[in-house]
Length: 490
Ligand code: G6P
Image (cartoon, rainbow, N blue to C red; front, top):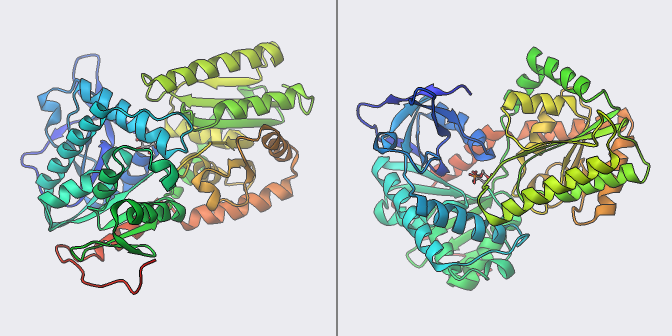
């Protein structure tokens, strides 16, 4: 998306649909002449929701992605048919609420404790403060009886805080990342407060039904409410529903990109630049320790080392976009990957033929589409992932029904993309075997698998995801506590 100039709204209209997310769907960019403009910010969340909100002329409340934003930057403004409401975060809150509680406590805790979560009371206090600020902004802009949809782990207290301020609203919450089993979640010193925060919503959405079940079980155990199947029965008669809504992508947009002349040309150029090897392996991730980048690069290098193929036969393109760079675990990961790529290329590369082309950078969607089209084997091996939209984007771009997807069974996407070459990312030998099988597979086999996966992705795109969630949320009668009693306690 090209950056757009800000257009200030004369008066801020109240909205019938409001999204509340940690980030605005745009980042503030300071131009050379000192003026500011806006560019779409990275992350699956934004690509998933921006088209829906533009169509609905809704409001989006979020952080502008810059702690130095001045007062004018914090005025609501119009962008691509929606009202954007910036919420400020101080430098200290950035450290404590964003880098700290969100990304060094909740992120590792919710991803199977792949890294050790840190628990600090001042981080928790900051998380409460910022969640209160978001809830206040939502209360101000939502029209009477509006639908408010809160996004992700950074804002789990907002549903209850907002309900206190505005009991007339229909409130939904969607968690984009995994929700852990009770055995892990229970480590959290503030486990009950977080559950009570989420229970402020009428509808709590998760990527997978297993996550919804984890939540229901925890509410029963730790808060003591009655539950039955996907419902929680609160003492005041309100019913909260917890259900799975697997997120997806804008399939049409990726198909269009993949077919476009510029992407086709760029894809051919990429293959040429890489020396036209028989097979191109591809990884595209945020540089995050949950993604299993280290293990997959090792598996690939061992296949060359063991003599299954040479650097002339196959090459690996790994794109790792910088993320949360000041958080310790992310710095350590970056150093580890830098070192590993250096070792592998030093040991196995030949002149002009590195085993791995490693790009520590973010790219626009056109370039990503060209990479999906240019490559043969997409390798997505997270240790734990809520969904993983890259896997679905790759499938959407394979218009010729060819190419292989190697996919971790611990990515949410694995519940839908059953015809991928499924792997356990902790099992390096198992991963090598599947990567080799994908490398050697004949066209017929690849087409059989890809055809089935393309059908699955086409059947549930991001519009379906959003409209399913919003339809369920709209069915809730605002301000009316339902008096239905559960048939029995589960
Ligand atoms: C994941 C999270 C999103 C987040 C994105 C980028 O997809 O679920 O909430 O926005 O990562 O991370 P960042 O910390 O840069 O917002």
